[in-house]
Image 1 (cartoon, rainbow, N blue to C red):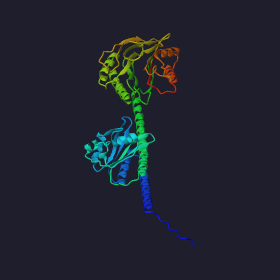
Image 2: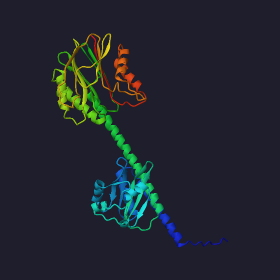
Image 3: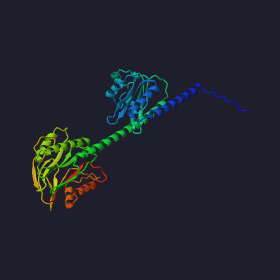
Image 4: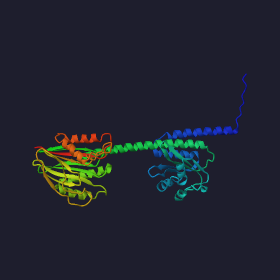
Length: 430
């Protein structure tokens, strides 16, 4: 017959066991809660509400570490007065090492302060601004895979007995959840930005001519435009004018990205309006310069505008600080620098008019500096002289624009484009 086993457990052991069961229950609840959403703001509120509940605290807050400013910023504060959270977010930031939160962030250690009035590290400015009274607090660093995320604070906890190990496990859970939510937020933001850039790129392309080539009379104009990123600041245009003429425009906006793209769209709109109302390129440049002088400081445009008679080859042009163009004749290739005014949009000025006449078989190559400023993986540039030499060697090529593009792409193979690339060929072939 089996003997009955009477095992007695001490009260301390039972109490310890009960605490562990409660802790496990809390951790299970927390894991379920923080896994319920990847929405950053919603998660912040859930985390702080749970921490406030577990510790029976008056308030809880999370300060996130801003890697750009190297400061702690209030992201969320849960307390009785909702306006307190807004005040903290707008007015309070802490340096690393400043206040208890700053100390915890710098040392990456959990702190339990039973009386903040006796702690020299306590930063009382937040209480002064909000009217809240901090008596005691628990401050824990939030550390993720990429380092410091921020600091969580539990303020005036009424629960006096707590397991330090459980607190540390909780904060690790919070840190992982917050980091995942931040990563999700960044991913959504990148996706949103990508979609916006795709839309901006489509809109920008819609401002350029519908086809990259036009033929009228004896004249054929062909262009290529390749932005360094999804959107760029280079532009070109060709328009049919009265009197058997074609207007050809090329330009390079200062800067890159969205601001340059928006500026480019404005320029093309203004240019087309003016070009159809004025007969001479220098007048078009003067009027365009006056309009662009109202643009934000630092934005300007280098440009060439020429008007060509498609029957006779007579050509009038005006230049605003743009690189020279190449003139390919039967026996020579030369860089042509005519009188130029400053880039458009900088200072009031009168732009000079220049005239040339194209002969049978002549070609002009207009370009932006992204062509000859292109770099290879050693950091070397093509250079304008080398570009001219290349064109001389391939002056007989029928598809010269494509040849130039391939040359630049091959030279800068394996590295990202540093600048937009635009080439326009004007071919006079009776």
